[in-house]
Every structure is written in structure tokens, then in C-alpha cells.
Amino acid sequence: MSDTKINFHVRAREQRKTAESPPRCTCCGNPRKRRTDGKGWQGTHGYCGTCTSRWHHQGRPEGGPAYLSAAERAARISAGMYRHHAVSPTSGRQKAAGRLQDYAWLRSFGESREAAAARVGVGEQHARQAYEPRIAAMSEAAR
Image (cartoon, rainbow, N blue to C red):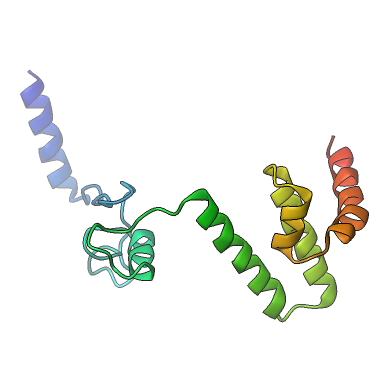
């Protein structure tokens, strides 16, 4: 009885001409996305677009893309934040607001005051005097 149900569903899908589920990435297991031109799937060698980018960035190792450790990921994020705040063509107020937001985000994940200030690119004293009271006021307002 179960065989007829399975066959019925397969025939129904063929009649509707719906696409079958997308292939899964061989690295992370996420479904791959269609290319914008409609000619296949994003990524190469069975990887999704994200894993393919990571694989190329790592020099295309034989075993596929490796995941970053927490320390490597933190270093990459802080380098990206520092680079963004250093060269972003925004005004000074927008940069300061972005640094405050990044600092608050890092502190919310348990980062120490010294480490968060260093990763955002401000001094520890400035973080203690300017950012900490604002973060406390924002958390009080949210309650």
C-alpha cells in the first residue's frame, strides 16, 4: 500500500512539472541556490556559494573548505569592523554611531571591555566613559 502512495506522489510531481528539491552542499548540508541565469546551481564542486567562497579563500585545499575556529572568526570580524570604520565614506557621527553599535554588540556576547574596545578601535577609557553609560541607558529604555 505504501508503494502505491509513493508512486502516486512521484507521478503527481511529474504531472505538475515542479522542480525537485535543490541539491545539498557536500560541506555544510544547506540547500544550494539556483544561479541567476537559471543554468544550474550556485557554487562549484558540490559546495554552496558560501562554502565555495570559503574554499577559494583558503587556497582550494584537497579536503574541501575548513571551518574557522572561534578565535579565527573573531579576528576576521574585528579586522572587518576596523577596516569598515577606517575607510567608510560616512560622516564622523555615523562612524561614531557604528562604533558604539559594534561595541554594544560585542559586549552583549560577553566580550570584555578591553577586548571590545580594541576590536572596535577605541580606547578603553573612552569606552568606559562614553559607551558604557549609553549602553546602560539603552538597556534601561528597552525594559
